[in-house]
Image 1: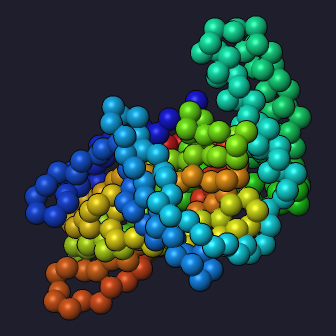
Image 2: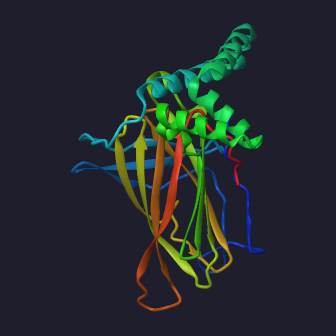
Length: 289
């Protein structure tokens, strides 16, 4: 099972700082209450952290109204991804209950699935073609992927820089907190913000655009991140983890952070881009930074 570990990082040889001289605390997965707008209805969603280092669970505090989707991902790809996630979870349950015969059967089923599933197969062929510099073949495999599943080429990581502020993201699927048979999929993501500019900045607000496999999009706004509005000095960084539940086995996230320079009175705020990244039960080969 994938895991998302937290570890201190060094930005330009200096430990990242929050506010006035406090070290950054890399805690368990957590998030803040956020407002989600679906059409003309606003929902409040809370991410509740649990003790014991088990990470959070996202629980709606209230929900009503219906959302509107824009576009649609490949439906058959979504159903195959759901089956893949279900098989992986069943194998984990069988192994934990020491039903090793059933676990072995499910393992073999997963292996066959991975060899026959078009998206996984084409991803593997594309990776091999690039590694062996067979770029004509790589072009063919990439085009086939675009045709059968346009979103399959989106990685589970992204990296963007705005005005010297770099935002890196990596997502992973958390099997232990997902229930594919009930259409519940849990994804964790880790964000690193590095200030490569010469001016100190403060993160004020966040905005997420979350799209599921059916093309349904939600906009999420919140104050700061994980209960903080961190000040990030030049050549330092801030890192945190949070999570997102989906009703489909695949989706995508993108958004921006609203920030301001704090070395000048009445400085205007500006938006720092969070480039699109995938939420996928299939994952990819990207390294966790």
